[in-house]
Length: 199
Image (tube, rainbow, N blue to C red; front, side, top):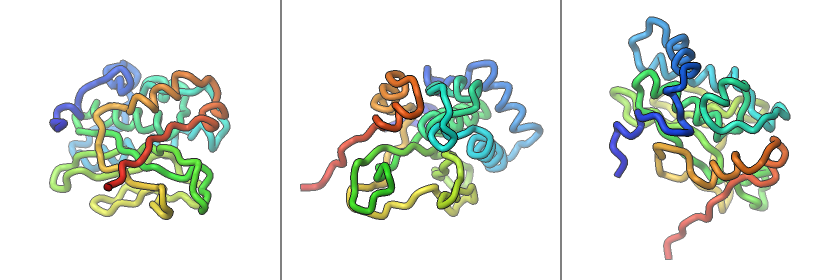
């Protein structure tokens, strides 16, 4: 079982020990002492100021939190890395969660892909999921704990909320973001995992 302190450590992907990430985290937190308010400020920054790579047709493909901050763009996976890094830099435990969704919002089903979001551990609330992928028509993710308002709902067979809260990015996600050089190549090869079904 993952201990809470594992959600406070820097990793090669969630590199909040990078000077630019530390600086941005301090800037966002300001004089705030309230962890929930700091979490909201970090969430809204990543949701609104970091452009979703596919929505905005933007390169380069980013992976590390520091790269996302530098280039101001990223897929949901990369944006979740930056949000986790900004929160951890303010000593707020944060992890990564995934949903499995129909890639093209296809009511018939596949192809399916992973979608990344975050969970933050807030005092008096516990783990709270939030989705900073970026709002657009049909997507209205908000930060309003303890009420959860994510970008996507699970609607069809094959889609799922995956229950784990990961301390670092899944290897299948890292592999895709390292392998492909443009946003459209990533979109054509979005990572997926098979669902574990009970027999």
